[in-house]
Image (cartoon, rainbow, N blue to C red):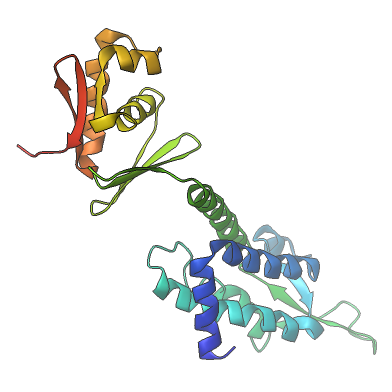
Length: 244
C-alpha cells in the first residue's frame, strides 16, 4: 500500500469507526478460516495457529496495508486504544526466515510447508474491545442529546450511562439511578430550576428528605464539568460552578 493510500484508509477509519472494526474482523476471520490449530501443545496454549506457506503472500497482502494504516490512525486519533504495532507479531511470524516448517510427510514429493501464526490472541481481544467502542460510539452518534446553551453543555444517554459533554471542560460519566433522573430533571426544565414537588413528580423513588443529600452527591461529581446544583427558595437550581 502506498503511503497516501495508508493515510486515506486511516482517515476513513477515523471518520467511520464501523469500517475500522469491519476491516480488522474481516482480515482475521480470513486468517482463522485459512489456518488450523497448532498441534504443538505449547504453541496451542498461546493461541498459535498454522498456515500453509503457499498462502502466506496473500495473508501479507491483507495484513501489511492494515498495519500501515494503523500507524497513521494512531497519529490521527491520539485517543485510540489500538497500538500501531498491534499486527507486528503476526506479520513477523509470517516473514521470519525459518518460519516455514515441513509437515510430517516431508519425505515424500508431496510434502507441504507450514508457518506458525502467533500474536492472534492479542489482536482478537483488541478487535472485541474496538467493536464495543464502535457500538457505543454509534449509539451516541445516533442519539440527538440534550443541549444547554446557558451551560454550553450537551447531555447524552447511553444504556445506564449519562455522558455530560462540555465545550471546554471535557466530559464526565454518571452512573446510578438516584443521580441520573435528578440531573435530567434539572436539565430539562426552563432556566434549570426545579421545585421539590416538580422533582418528586418526575422521580417518585426519592423522598423529600433525601433531595439535599442527592444534590450534594451529584454536585460533587458535576464539579469536574463546572456545574453545580444549589438550593433556591422552594427547590433547586443548576448553574455554572463557582469556585469559592
